[in-house]
Amino acid sequence: METNKETKYNKLIVVLSVAIPAVVALLFGVNLRKLGYDVQPLSFLPPIYATINGLTAVVLVAAVIAIKNGNRKLHENLMKVAIACSVAFLGMYVAYHMTSDSTKFGGEGAIKYVYYFILITHILLSIIIIPLVLTTYVKAWSQRFDKHKKIAKITFPIWLYVAVTGVVVYLMISPYYAN
Image 1 (spheres, rainbow, N blue to C red):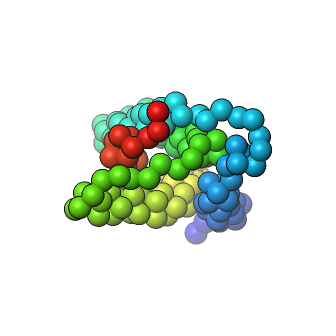
Image 2 (image 1 turned 90 degrees about the vertical axis):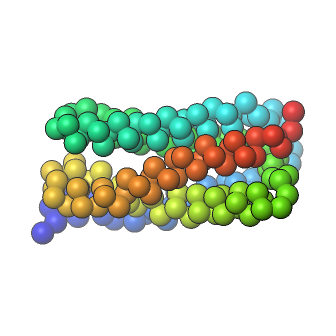
């Protein structure tokens, strides 16, 4: 049976799970320079947000190790850091794309298919992970650790995949960024 706290936040989870991808998609298509605003391209951001994705992956693994070792407080703090990293990544990603032209992948042959497979699965799973992370967090916050543990077993590998493939996508496309 859900707690009042869970019920209260389930609607917010649904709203955020729809709104975040919709806003990101909308803002992804907005280029401030093409709209006539005098803004400099934030071309320094991709290596920073790729590093943040890598940090997210490391923090996620550390959080799992912490909870397996019985350190609930460390686990909780690491998960908050992972969420903060993901939010920071998202903000920088959107800011970059609102000020810079999209970079096209220049690889050819089989590597092109590998790149697009990784990119597409990364994007799709980054949408799916939003409600999973929020639900997993609310279950823990509501002290429904049985439910939290059950959904975390699904959330963790997907979130880890999204974080790691974010780095991989950056590394594969970085040679094609305009200087």
